[in-house]
Amino acid sequence: MYHISFKSFVAVIVVLLPAVLPAAPPGPESAEFAAQRVERTQRERCAIYNNDGCDIFGVGADTPEGFLAQRMNATLGSQVDTVYYCTGATVMFSHDARVGEVYGKHPVKVA
Image (tube, rainbow, N blue to C red; front, side, top):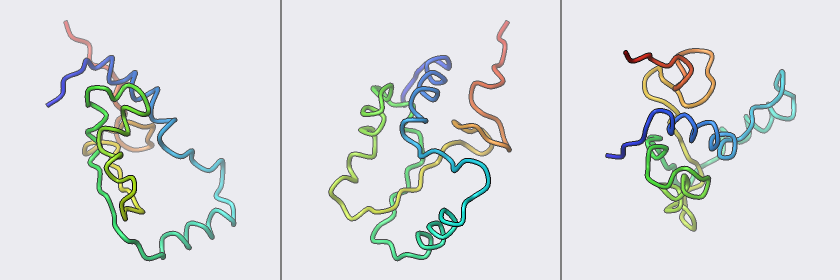
């Protein structure tokens, strides 16, 4: 098990997620984006890789390259063409969310 401070965890999230995750489409979904979504959800997949997301806690995950090296480099050159990535645990997320809590947004004060 990896141990990093909560402050370091939040710093990693703030720095890495924008670099790793695709940006959300601005405003309402365009017709072109909607058509791409339909096309991509209906295509046949070779292999799906399910990453439970805990690689954010790994030693060396403080850079985009180090973050990806934790678990994603193994998929390079493989038949994996789809990645499911978990960005949270139950209702705690490592990205801005409309539902649930975001790590670091409501820090717990320790006496």
